Length: 361
Image 1 (spheres, rainbow, N blue to C red):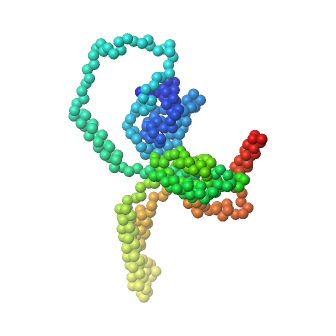
Image 2 (cartoon, helix red, strand yellow; image 1 turned 90 degrees about the vertical axis):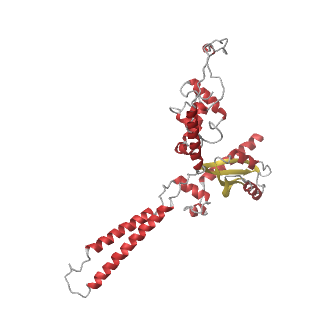
Image 3 (spheres, helix red, strand yellow; image 1 turned 90 degrees about the horizontal axis):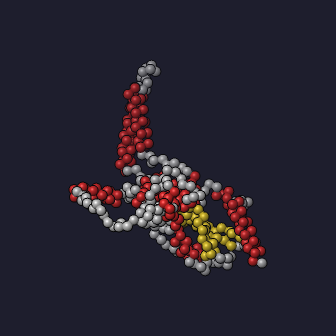
């Protein structure tokens, strides 16, 4: 059946029921099905009346800069997605009476046959489109995740816990730096960074595999998650070659201008002439200026494309490399430094532990 519309209450209710148990329209990752459906909305739905649709709409809006790069067929209409068969919520009074002899076709139906040439042309265009699409290799969407693994108590062997966690291997999973964060009462939890390919690795499955180590792991939690920017294709090598040729040509002109100026100086060094006649000729000056312009142009063309610097990318790079590039590392590691957020969290967990003990009594 598919979606009908996203304006009427019936259409929004149908979409809300469909998304009650789903995060995406199709599959377990964002795709063109989500993009087409998202664009069919005129605005954000009412979160109180349609909470599941509002949740999905807000989540897909975060991928809006990457809509063109998401996988899937963008030519399909939003009505092609949704529940296969369901009954729209309607008032029983408004339902039409059951009609008899529904199977009877009083007027008959003449099925029009498509022109074979039109069908062949359409199939050829589809095949050409698929071939072009398969030739384009899109960079995989990746995310950097900070995962927290909590042990049972202070007697848990933390080395074995870390070894069991990093022993898990998946296609598209890369383990990064880790550290032990004090929780309280001598207990430390593991905080480890990892990079995952969104289409290959499911964080839920990864957490389930880690929690299967029941002798060491109490629970896991995703502390932070950030999408990594897609790397742009490097500039073609021909541009580097052309820039080197231009720079070399400018250097040759500059050397020739310098040698000509030297010859002019030597030629008139022993001749007593007025200061006006000993000045450099205009052609040497012009050649030197033109050579400087050419050298500058060659160096600019050979420079890599500048990339904008954002705080999130810089902080993510510091996390991936374990803080090696952190300019504030000495300040954070000095003896008198207090991590306020860590202390607040430790205090909150200590209070919760005391409350649990009092309830047990």
